[in-house]
Length: 220
Image 1 (cartoon, rainbow, N blue to C red):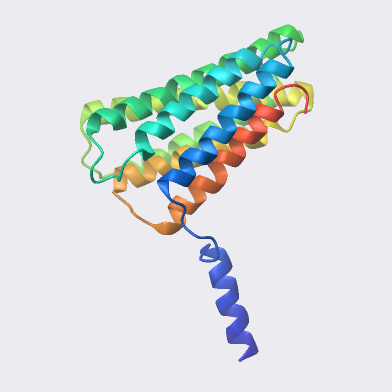
Image 2 (tube, rainbow, N blue to C red; image 1 turned 90 degrees about the vertical axis):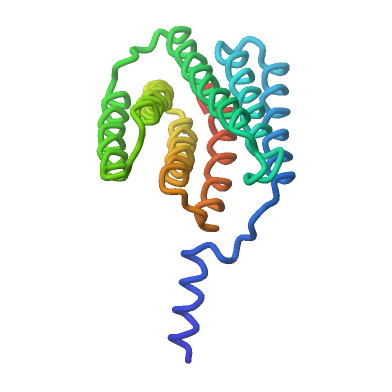
């Protein structure tokens, strides 16, 4: 009886059944709180090289969240999906620019062990992505968009890891969690998966990753 209880508890923990699904309104509230945090950091630390672009990146992510979560998915038009995806993509670019500005301001080298580790990780990421889409009937346009999106989020991840290594910052953790949430969303989109555990993982990793990226943009 004790062993069965332990097994059941462990299964519940691993499958995240102890975490409730959150509503679209809650998702938007979380995203708005992150936007407020980014704005406050920008106001409190205008001298930080990255502050402006980090706040812009979070603003774009909030636009993306609004497009994707403003209505039930079955009622959401494709225009909102494409607009949201585009906003997130530009948001990743803004985060990358923000951290590159930090690198330049501190006279750090862009290419360092952190950069190479991140590049190696992205190569593994690409291999996993290729295996996942192998055999799937995807249009050349979809494959092109998917590949470009991976390039953009990879550039952001590598740039943040580069800065994190030189500045001894924990921002790379946020970048990794942000990357993981994007990967899960990609898997959901390609395979048309609707799993509670995937939704829960996205909304654990995504806001936590953004929070770390924002608060650790200056040697944190």
